[in-house]
Image (cartoon, rainbow over all chains, first blue to last red; front, side):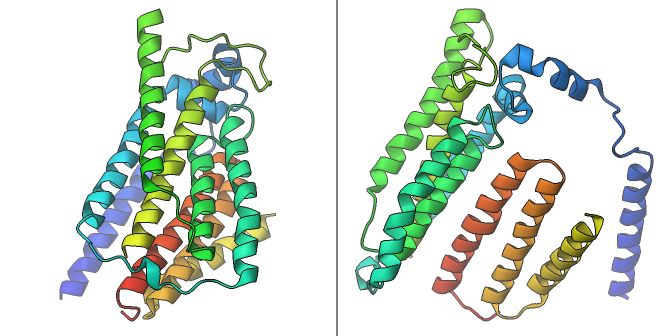
Length: 226
Length: 78
């Protein structure tokens, strides 16, 4: 009986969703805002990557909220993990020579690729979040491959705070200089070059450091504390 | 092209169902990793390389690693 009621409820919800989505012509352009971004985004923001120009310029305030959410999540995980006292770090068996050498060889290249991803966020696909995640996966590789090497967690905390502060300070600078929070007050330069798009590369460098330090700090806490 | 995408979607669905059905949690985590990986390939085909990079690095790498660390500290069997 309960299963029957469940199936009927699912059918009602599914038909409601279907009726809502049925009238939407997928793929057809119904809004002008996308065309507006595509036609005048490069001129207004200086960033060639349209996604970046929306994420950091037209909707920069939302990105600040996103970064804050990630910060609160990492804060909550740190609060949960801080109650765990035991550290079994010393009991780990050392990895073999091939594994540790491979990790030490690959680690700088992964860091380099992550840095490239967030430095070129306004030119090529990618950006602060992706670059930070790539850097954190490099740290994950090092924690798994060479357990003896451990970065000081206070470095992660310092980088994280600095990234968030730089983002907010640039926003406040725009507020004081031009009257809008996160206003693009730096010169936009020539489009499609590395030094262009004003504050976008600066903010993406800050976000890259912040996200990378946050996720690496989460991995550090999980591996060391557990 | 459409056949490649259809194949990927079928594999993704199979991975999602397998992740629900596996009693061994490590296998379930690997199956959900497969779902994230194919989702990132599909994002790339849908011309969203930014989302594809985020999905591949976070969904397929970091989330899987965090789940495996959690399994190592708790029960492996459901």
